[in-house]
Image (cartoon, rainbow, N blue to C red; front, top):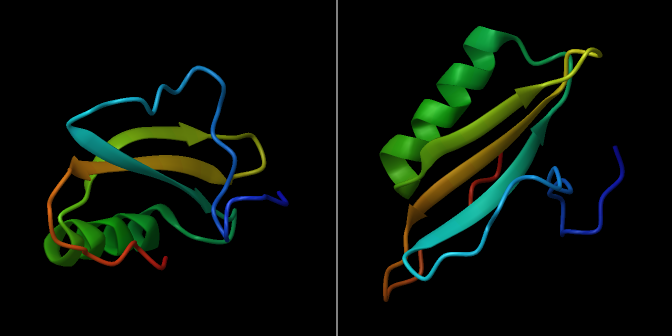
Length: 82
């Protein structure tokens, strides 16, 4: 699905991203990404970027919308490039 968020997807309307303690990043995984591959990609982001899984929504076409979160920090850590 096309988006306006610098390569990231629009988030579902019921996902709240407002927090003083957490930063969030929504991602879209296309239908051709298997569950195992998605799991491995997200695990790498968790390990090296400090992100953790907040929400996942699976759509009938096989695509997924994923919301990652991490505690806000004073130093800059790159955003995931999945």
